[in-house]
Amino acid sequence: MDFEEQVKTSEIVFKGGLVQVERQQVMLPDQTTATREIVHHQPAIAVLMVTPAKKMILVQQWRAATNDTTLEIPAGKIESGERAIEAAKRELNEETRLAADQLEPVASFYTSPGFTDELMTLFVATGLHAVAKALPQDADELLRLSELDLPAALAQVKSGRLADAKTVMAVWYWQSHPELGVTRHG
Image 1 (cartoon, rainbow, N blue to C red):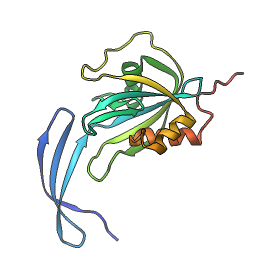
Image 2: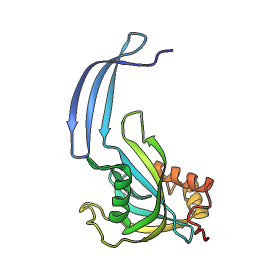
Image 3: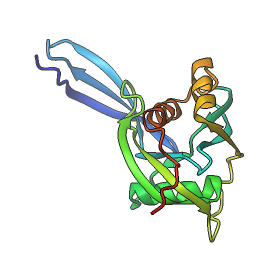
Image 4: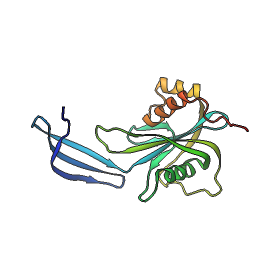
């Protein structure tokens, strides 16, 4: 079966600092028409940070979209001309004031493909240490760091306290790789 839709018309109906919204009129494979609204967003990164004490570092912040505070792994958009790994290092510095000896990509995924083209890459950071030079934090971000061990993180997912998709994905990734954060000698 052919699923591809043919775009007949397209217009940008909103252009903001973070996103733009495109409205498309499309022809479906069965020759009927439909309207699609697509939120365009720069690619982004997120980082599961696991300390030598086997705790993940989370950022608590206000999120206007949910009208509440969230606990999330550090994340941010990839700036123009920046590689994903560079964005991950920058976000770790800006949001946590930490750097990582090991920073590995583990998966790339669309955050919500029903309406946005945002592609996010999840990294795992271990061997954490203080940065030599702190980068400025975003002026509009008020952040508080916290730590959870794996059993507590799993309980927070189950209770709904950790409800951010990238963070839930990171917790489940950690659950399937419990050795993360363990220092190897030799």
